[in-house]
Each structure stands twice: as C-alpha cells, then as structure tokens.
Length: 330
Image (cartoon, rainbow, N blue to C red; front, side):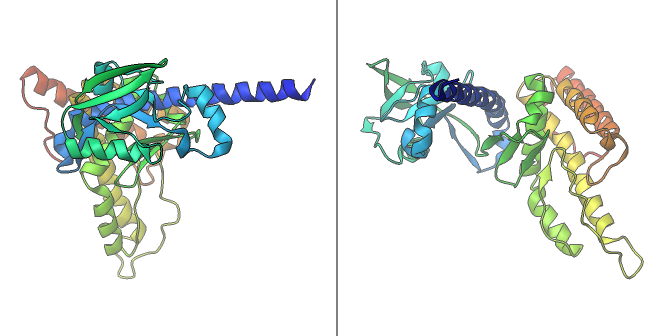
C-alpha cells in the first residue's frame, strides 16, 4: 500500500466522520429550536431572536483543520458560510441553504474576521426582519428573514458516547450516546425538555443554596448522571446526613424537571410518549437505575410519573385548557 493511498483514505474517513457528526448536531438543533421557541414564556427576559441556522467561518478554525471542514461542509474559503439550517426555522423559510456564503446583512458588509459575532450582534440589535445577501454557486442572492424569539439557551453536542445530557444553568450539553437511544425526535425532545426545565426552574441556583445549607457546594443538573458518589458525613445531632439532605433536594429537582419538561415537550407539539420510551431505553442501558435511586428517582418511578403527567396533559388538551404545569410533581 502506498502512503498516498493511505493518506487519501484517512482524509475520506475524516470527512465522513465530520459530516456524520454535523448531521447529528443538526438533528439536535432542530429539536432544540422548537423547544426554545415554544417555551420562551418560561425563560422570562432570557430570550433572543433565533434565526435557525449555524454559521461557520474557516477563519474561526485552526489552520490544520480548514481543508477538512471546507470539503466536508462546503465552506467558502473567505466568507462566513451557512453550515446547517434548522428544519422549518426562519432561515429555512427564507430559502437559505447549507453552503450559502454570506456577503452582507441589512446592507452592511460582513467582515472576514469575527464574522459570526458581527452577524449575531446585528440580529440582536435589529430584532426584526433582516435582509441577507449571499452567494450560491457564485451567483448573488438576497432574502428577507425574520428571526423568532426563543430561550437564549445554547444546546451543544459532544462526541462523547455516554448516554447523558447535562446543564450548568446556562447551556445544555448532549452526549452523542443519547442519539443512539433516542430513536425519535420526541424522545430526544424529552431529554432536552428535562434539561431546559432544570434551567427555567433555577435548579442549579437552588441546588447551590441547598448544598451550602447542607455543608456541601456545587450542583450540576443531569438527565441521567448519578452524582451521588463522594457525598459523605453523618449529622452529629442524629438527624439526616449531608448525603441524605442533598439527595432529598436533588430528587425533588429531578422529579420537577421530569414533570415540567414533559409540558415543554407537549407545547412544542412532540409526542409526550417519547419521555416514557427514552426512560425505558436508559433503564436497559443502565439496569442499576431500575433499582438504585442515587441522586435521581429510579427509572420505574420516573416512568410512572411521566405516564401520569402525560395523562394530565392529555386531559387538559381534551378540555382545551392551557398547558401549564399544576405544581411541583412528586
């Protein structure tokens, strides 16, 4: 085998791997966009105009990676390029496509450096219809697009194969292993809805306060993560241990995120049955969670809660009532 043959095959595999990851990321963004727009009222003032695209410039990448990204994603060598488009989002409705190279926004030329930041600032500042000038296969085009308001919560995909998702209270991180288990977008919506509920219900902040009261600091909300390990220390007065106090707080947060999150799923017009299916899939992935609660309810408890919540949502729909959670579940 010649060295050039091996190098060419290595490059092909890199391109295919990158394209596969971007396809997965696009699926996550499609679901996230619907959830963020449908549930913007729960995000208060933390909302932004969402154009429904992901932009990428070769100038933002390390020089060694530019050729691979340009080939895999059809990126323009000099201009900010549309990398992905959210299905049914403003950019898609305006007729933009992946590979379109942006030239100007609202009549202002897009600079070659810090171009993504330039466009984002314009969209935030103008908060209305925007005129996008771009090149497609060398021909100039102009389209008008009106971003929609949605929660200002970035959703990021990581290539880690674990079946998990996390939030730090500002963003959501999805591990690619979740996509292997979430066979439908409704199941993926249940994962993202759960994490969004942690954010809107301020569980991170409440968790920090509660742990401080229990002589423990730090909290990270997670869809499937068991952060129970390492909590030790009995109460010298014979009451609940630090471990038990923190577990009680966080079990409540998880139940509330399951409950409120399913309402988020319903408002975005996804099948609420996805919550039940994804939890059963996670139970098979980690059978220990069927029996051991840790910081989270066991999977049988969670499925039953989700079933009851789905029935509650169905009844409200039948009565044509607003899809507003009643109170904390549990």
